[in-house]
Image 1 (cartoon, helix red, strand yellow):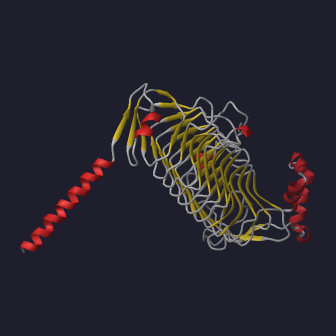
Image 2: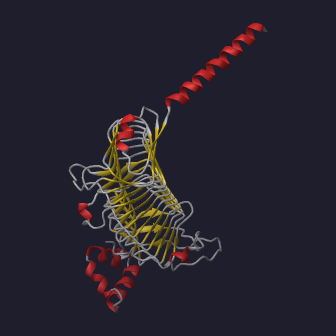
Length: 428
């Protein structure tokens, strides 16, 4: 027993010693209004916290050691319209509670509000306003980023092509981009050559693309809202994505683009009032289910051999053209549950909730309209209506189509009418 007591005392003393050493190694440095943040960074040791009081600081900062830079009362750091406002060259840097503004506008130099250089792993930017910069937050070859609850507004005084992106993520892994509000940049979230990341709860509007996302696999897009952009979610050259519970509305071109995408799940999204709800191009072996597609000029634009997808349990309601599809063979959707089509003219004689005759999205007139867009000017003419009637009577004139053999008679989404007022927006 005495030996055990001695060992216990020694362990307790060691723990207290290590704890005291840890406390001593992490200091809090304070910068008052009118002081120098750069001087505090230079004086700080790795692991320290620098607290910046409310005020206006005309500084361009370089952070080259692990530390936390925290604003108290939302101080403003102004870059003087040159270079980056904050450039980070170390891992484990947290930037929190600041207004970061006025970078340069050199596209070649990638001028940014906050720039994380390659190797700056575990970066964190939280609760900041990153405004009036070329690029908002740039992350390159830095893993485990946490970008949360920031407001990012670009240079709306510049032409769209001259702006940078709100968040730029390149060649990085395991990023969490959560609950940010992004507007008036070029693209809201630009992602390339990355993997295993989560994009959740972001509001993205008044941009070219809400997201411009390429070559980034095994990731999740969920609970984001993209609206009033030229294009909403653009997901390209990817595989193994989960795209769920997003809302894409009033985007001039498309709500959600699925281009060259495989082995992904796209479910429970609301796509309303866009030029094209879904633009699906060269997409195979995906599951597209339980989405509400309503009030778009075109519900789904399907092209480039996009077969072998499971498209089931979706509601296609009041799109001016449900499907735009030009191909050489039919594509069958709704094999398990059936989709709902608001313009279905069949019946349900046995009362099982599914139509007794197949729904076909395209006829020969739709095919001609896809090839000759000016035809839409006379779509209501008696001659065009006669052509539709004749094509249905003579299968030799039948056009390849999306076919749903047992369409549902009622939509799954009962509150679809709340999206009736969303219509394509011209963007900027």
